[in-house]
Length: 127
Length: 417
Image (cartoon, rainbow over the protein chains, first blue to last red):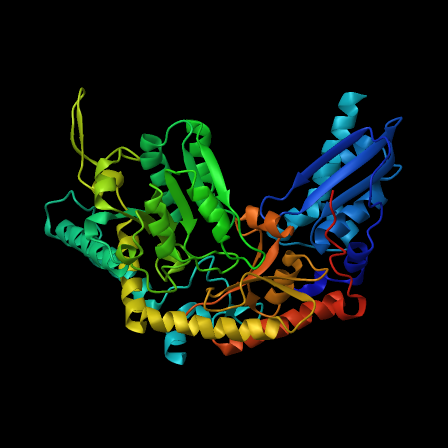
């Protein structure tokens, strides 16, 4: 794999992630890590009328992981929950501006979406 | 050096179109053609099961397997019957915890291990302690990455049953004074279990001189095949222990009402063993002997000193473990300010430089230093100064890609949750 993934979009979101922090009263919250590398992401969501009214994340991770979380939170704000639950690896790669990713780095890229989906499902359970 | 490198066919492959700079021998070493051929020879000329057939070929295989045992045992200063073949050091350590541990540890007993252990010398004891309601006490390490002597003395005063400790750390590189620790453990009434996975491949190790009761090691980290490793156990202890796995090979007689276990070490080798692995590992031992373990150690010391001298000059690079090469092996874990270890590894790979990144199966050490992960370069007999220089240039490339010099915000990208 080439260093192509270290393009400006990913590096910018890594250095200055969007929606980094905590929500005052999230309706759903979940945290998970990648067992092999120690990347950790926590997502907090506020769902109103079936839509994501707000979302924030915190975490520690590599450039791909943090950029993925940052871009994802930008993307899903205002979207319907069921729409987001349908998102897959292709959507994440599109957000990152990548065509492919190696399996190991794929885990870094996909962790935020996985955590986001579970936080949304938890929010649904409570509602 | 060129002569050694020529023995390793894999070193001529390209990595991302560049010369392969293999700096991950602490994860697994490469194998010389001599080892590969020994395995090939076994399959082409004598493949048959051992300790079973009465035909010539099976006798040859049994002979080769037992010769391998003697050869490998003598390499670590043990008698052949004191060497149990296992899959790797992990299995060897689990064997001790499961067999000796379950038979001897009781409620309220103390098991001592350290903060610098690989998970394989930590989790078996943690599970054993939980099962037996024993106490697991963890010896601290200093900021420099050395064992904290005061903490060790304190734990030994508790009168432990077991002192389980690594001989050389797979993250910090620290080499512990195994002989002194084994003596202290004995004086405290404990058995000493040594994890030799990172020491046996890299220096002269003699279990009798050290005086430990058990020592585990892995073949694949010392030029041998994967799936073969060893457990040295003091004969009386092995004799007294119940079996680990049960099945074929490990019995003398089995009747519905009564079972006689086989003699040591076969009692612990249930099922068809990894004969090819043992033969390959024996050839690996021959290869290391021909170089001389003192040469291996001094070669790695030289490379490590060279690498450390270049790395500590860089203000944005943080190296973990002792800087004195007399106290450490050829393993260098490091981080670059503001860059996750994963990204370091991936950018180095674009230059053909293969290192490990992550928690190195030693999360307590990561906690100790408050880092999520680290990059790790490790050296072996086939590495040279060119490899070290490639690593240093690779680190410069990482800094360029991440524009570290311009921004230089220390630790800005590791955030607490």
